[in-house]
Length: 594
Ligand SMILES: Nc1ncnc2c1ncn2[C@@H]1O[C@H](COP(=O)(O)OP(=O)(O)OP(=O)(O)O)[C@@H](O)[C@H]1O
Ligand SMILES: [Mg+2]
Image (tube, rainbow, N blue to C red; front, side, top):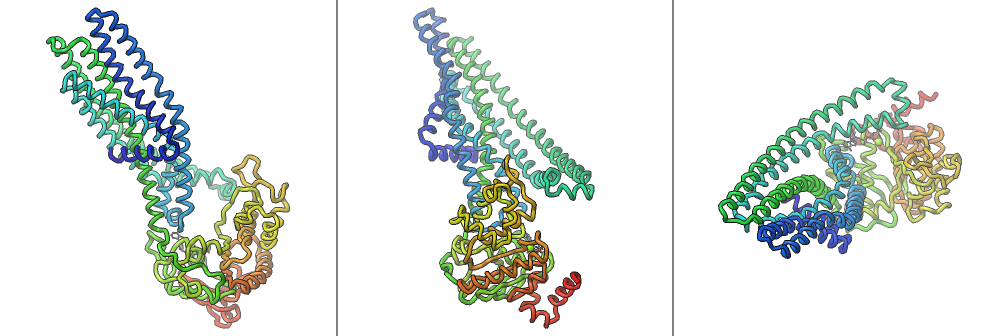
């Protein structure tokens, strides 16, 4: 319950910061609406006593008071709705913006790559929408707290024993809390299976995998796995629902018994002549209201408990991101690289796993050089790239830029000097010009800069085929969007990587897998010339990951990664002379082309 109230306060505080007048108006209207009910009971007592005494004039006034309070009960909450409706929209938007800022603006990507954290993010993303109901719940709850206090006061005046009525409301509350815990746990337990099921649904409905599904006849397999997963999830959640329902019903029964006893008590007082008929009417009306108040309080506390979970997850994310923000940022990013980038005994394990992915890596990328990284699938090439971009920090050892520790260079400043094309590139569904232009935000809409970048990336042909050229809206999320092939998206991603003209570090992690070997070779031949020019200007380093040895051989230095270690490093000529792993793989691939 404390958590629920804390979350209600969180929402009200957020509303207060967003729109003070609307928050005050909503609260006033909600509280007046809630208090109108006990006031009506009080007016009924007045009316009954006046009627019993035969005092027509007083009864008339009392009748008016009953009518006025009844109107309050019926209408005030609707007026409040007008005030809080917009407030809840604003609060939801604020929370969503915060969620986007937190999960995409953080230093690293661990929370998005690590399955157990990704599950929490999924739940959070689904639950953010509930903030809207949360505002309603928090406002109504505030009104109820005032109304319940007033009701308690009036009941105590009739017979202090009646104060036990709100007390018998405690068992349903406790039962409700326990029930919510059971439901939440079942949801969290189901999150992994739900995520998997959604993966199968996407597989079956998106265009990308459609061809393989048909060729390999995988429809049946996917259907069966999807059905199994959902049946499992539903069974588990159904069991939790039944348990929760029994708990809640049990709690409500305890209250019902208390209510009956309370009413009998006051009727007994009236028969004994200790209380007026008006008091009996007051007690019966109030007791019925307590029932309702408690029922709504229980329901609202349910809602608030769910919001409280969202709140707790949100706080977890905020704390988690804050803890991982780089603590020291006292090395300025260099204007140019003078000597190079060095890995010093770098070891890396993905957080939350025991497998050492990189072990004792020592490497030096000299200023102005082109480096190629080769190795089998899973050898650790992309991991090296992730460390260079600082999506993760080394588990031990350090990376130096010249002699400065990379982890102490301000992250934004470092990223501002990196250009990158990734293996798992993003399909940014913007207008084509922006899809490429965002590679260097100050030039995002600069037609000439975008065209030059596309030219450097050999990707001009993609735009040539679009009906409206660079002004074409891309992507299926837009009704009039043009969808591209995987290779076309990849070429645009490569164009994006070429937007920054003088980066300190250019990373190309298999960004050309969609090109054929010859096109890739030609592209890099031209590209390497450009890279040397950039290298002379800023000492910038180009790191290329590729499986194609014909491209790789152009690099000044080739690093062969095997099982997370550097197996060999040197120029093509040196490595061929060494007759090691590189020479073996090179000859294997060369013979395949003969
Ligand atoms: N986010 C992650 N969490 C845990 N383990 C990971 C993660 N990403 C990669 N790995 C593991 O780290 C190892 C190295 O992966 P990496 O992506 O660096 O390989 P790679 O050399 O780039 O392979 P490929 O040629 O297939 O792109 C692999 O065993 C992989 O399973
Ligand atoms: Mg990779």
